[in-house]
Image (cartoon, rainbow, N blue to C red; front, top):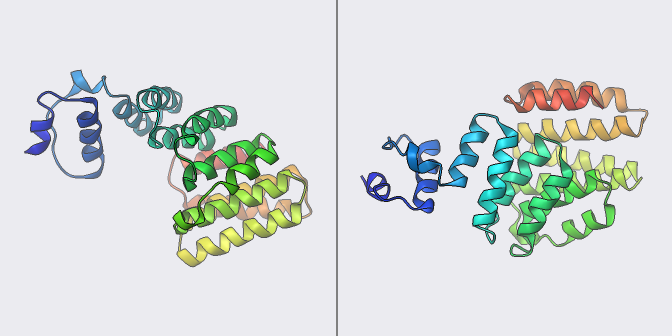
Length: 230
């Protein structure tokens, strides 16, 4: 088939495409073990599948060096740094490299704003959110951006507005039937409530712990650990 033909003398791009097909279809691929090491994209996905987050980020950075104008390695590396490693400085560094050639990209801008807000870089986080092109939003990004705006408000000291924005994000996720985003938003809301010792932090914690039971592993354990350590 065409997959086998493209892998007879594989380029980095064809190896990456083969890795995508292997992950997302039932197509059987020939052995490319000796060549797949040449593709940092494929190595990133392999490490991610194995939940080796440090190696996944390392490979994503190398992938980004090879494709500096693409948003994809930054999206993946930034997501892992933000969501699994809680390394917001690393996430910022990865995402900023891609921002210059992907101005207005909603997912990249949201992830960068999240990393900045987690470091209490409020003005920079606001600037990153404001650069997002709203015409590019889908339902999931709409929810994520509302939640990130809630985080920014919490970190700027406006807890009431932050709470309202998180609740808005949760209600929007409910309207779209995004159960995973409801759980994640409630988890991050609970963290902010606990960190500012709000009167509702105990209820927020209990509600979040219940919701994240619906998340798949490893994200359920990651969110539980994050909540328990706050």
